[in-house]
Amino acid sequence: MNEFLRKIYWVLSMQFGFDPRRLMRSLRGIPRYVTDLAQFRRQYAGVLALRPCLYDWYEEGGAAGSEYFLQDLHVARKIFDANPTRHVDIGSRIDGFVAHVASFREVEVFDIRPVKSLIPGVIFSQADLMNPANPNIAYCDSLSCLHALEHFGLGRYGDAVDPQGFSVGLRNMAGLVTAGGVLYLSVPVGQGRVEFNAHRISDPVGLVALAHTFGLQLFAFAWVSGGKLHQCTADFATVLESLRSQRYALGIFTFLKS
Image 1: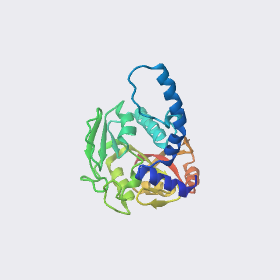
Image 2: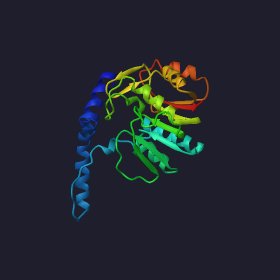
Image 3: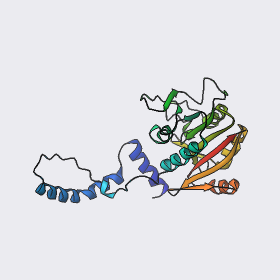
Image 4: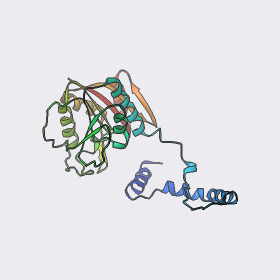
């Protein structure tokens, strides 16, 4: 599927709730459904109600190759091994990464949108990291922001429209981390651009340089591409230089606060 068709599919499925791929799989499943129903009726004398599930025959047993799944597991394991004194998350998925971390430790969550559910192990505060109440106050020794910073300043989640939102958000996150603390950050990387108002794609070389101005030093790097997690153990410059020419990958940065 080329880039144009991918965008059309994304708009139809994610914004308008119409998934052409699921529709085709459901239509394909009708003959099997009718055959299975007839066979079941012949062998079952009880009350029978109908609720067709037509596309599940053609789905995998789980989405273990999605970039969200891979990044969530990767960073959660890092936090488990590090066992920080206070871990804070900014804007990551509650039903994904935050749930992973909350299964083994307490986590504080800051998000511009409200979270009304009471979740064991999660302390929630509504906050706008583009305009924090107490900027530059070192608050935690471990902070994560996964697949969220790329939306800052685009208005998608109720935040103010600001072309500098990405830089402002990163600066304010760095200000929350104590000296010697860790920031886990994931954002889309590749050929730098804004796809309004979905997200930004960051030039990974430029991102590392920007983080450096806020006192953040790259300590570890991984990326998700082609449904696989890749880890860089050395020579960050070569890997980042290669990724900046690609159309899209998910970069997972581990920064140390100097």
